[in-house]
Image (cartoon, rainbow, N blue to C red; front, top):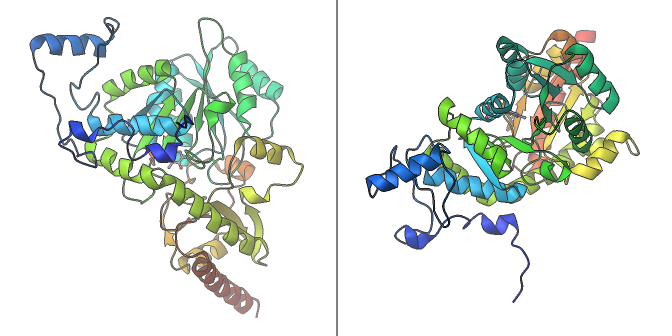
Length: 425
Ligand SMILES: *Cc1c(COP(=O)(O)O)cnc(C)c1O
């Protein structure tokens, strides 16, 4: 008998689900219910004692369902399945990526503490960090790719002497420019700021490459965070978020989720169960197409600069980090078109087949303009520093035929070229 461990893609159709407990239904039914019936008052009492952590589980005792804000079968199965991808003890799902991010941060970062974060990050996260957390007297300190460990530590200690950095929040590859942060390096910083009775938690937003192509827990992260709206959902039809990690950290986060009410509903959970069955084939096919499209873009005369993980400089520090922690170049491409906002808009307005929309990681290819859309709220100085220029265009490559996509890109470039030459005459 072969005893090799099953790979996650083999588990996505069965993990956590026994058809014989559900009238033989091959697929888990949608449990569209808000509440669950107890067998007796004694059972209800036991469940509540466990839910509030009033006592430990007795030997062989199983926790049952109480109310769908705490837990429900569709979300429960989904959490086990995502945890399998990350080789984590446990997972938690949320009503959006931002719900996952805000709930997780506020579980560990308390008023008076400091949050250390990498930039650029997703625009919503950037707003939360700069405009919401300070309202709760939480100090925030940023760092960018390539900065040294000592420099970052010194900045924290100088900016907030005596205050406790309780979380490091890293997004890698970062939205929108695919900037890479060394997870192992940030894990050393987290250790530096941890003591016996106060832990600095390292959370990594794994939306761009996870759950298939990057496994942050292997490199010292404590929590992996997702916008499940993107690759995990993969069809632009669900908004959801997730977090995976150790039993201890995830149960603290779930405790907070219960009172924020930021859990995922049964119908969306069911849709994501379906999505997880194909996440690997989708991500692999999308990455393969992106490689073909990036190669085309790299040599185009109207492309000033391309931000794609396949084109990191050989022998550079970033390439070394990429080789160590990423398993694929992914399907996100950003590039600067020759010119500025006018040329970028002209290109995007004439790009067919791609949908002009924010979001990413879906079956259909999407295109957007970060400086005026997803990252409009990033301060102008930071936009310059982070390379979010007016000429930057972001593409998320989907499952269309890559040559068809290239034809459409070529057509849009032609329009820009014509406009440029008529402007010169
Ligand atoms: C979209 C996104 C988020 C926010 O997720 P929502 O599901 O839109 O709330 C967070 N991080 C990254 C990297 C994203 O792309």
